[in-house]
Amino acid sequence: MRAPLTINVAGTGRPAVVCEPGMGASSAGWSRLRDGIAAVTRVVTYDRRGLGASPAGPGSGGVAALAADLAQVIGCAGGPAVVVGHSLGATIARHLAATRPDLVAGLVLIDPIPDRWVLRHAWWAEPFAQAGYLAMESLARLRLIDVAMALPLLRGVTRSSTSPLAALTDAERAVLAEEMRRPVSHRTARREFGGLLHSRAELRALTAHPEITVPLTVISGERTHPLAARLRRIATAWHAHLVDASPNARHLIVDDGGHCIPRYQPDLVVAATSELLARSVGPWAHARRPGPIGDREVHAAHHVPQEWHGSADAGVGGA
Image (cartoon, rainbow, N blue to C red; front, side, top):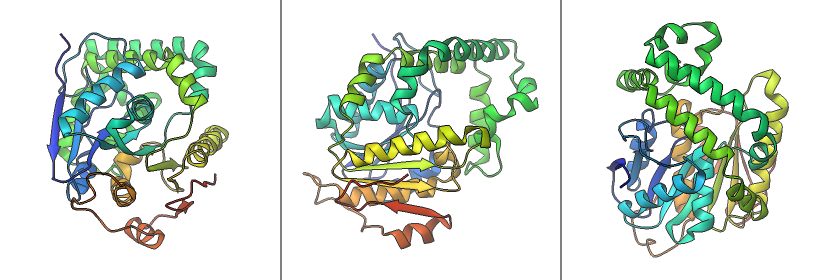
């Protein structure tokens, strides 16, 4: 019997929105995003197995297994849902949309990982990453995480949960710090990373059929270290490819946003999700819905240089 998942529900309305965080990340730090969406419709946040308040359980941590858990959460939410997925969470959401389209009403993909990066580089990336996660787990076991995280070399690992610029409450920062001290958190992140690298069949299927038939918004965070500028351009171009391949898609490029947009700019994600809900159609059309959010409103809401590419009915994106 599989371990239970910890699920939190807020708001009312249909379709529900289910949030799927990135690799090794719990739902802690998503409260502002959750509260913003709850003002529009029902929103569900949850912790994957071994993360946050959900106990660890057996399994490979592969994309198919994680998508099966997401399907279970959507069932608890009452049916088809819009999935907001960040990084690995976006890959999980895409796989579910491809294999269980009856469960997915729309997708908001935040800086998704390009499939080809995993397919091409898994052979050398796995040993380095696994060694890193094992080292972090060992530090947690020795209760040396706080000391290690104070070192300049490792400070970047926790930047999104410690930076004063992150939209986090003091209570969330405390929860995230405590999660870093738990060996199981790093063990689960290692399992999820390995599971992604070994999900080659699932990633090949997504690569062969990139089109997403439900309403789609892809958010690309452009800010990165100068040494990663080329990788950033490749990722954004791949995001535009997803938009180009899909009939009802938009591409939001956030010039001053990095990879961890849900923690730094949750209001932007709330606005993008509300706009996607306005584009959704289905048996829930009678439910409480927001009005469309135009380019001007999104600019004004966040005071950052953003661009919408394409239109509500055309999947034309730019990089």
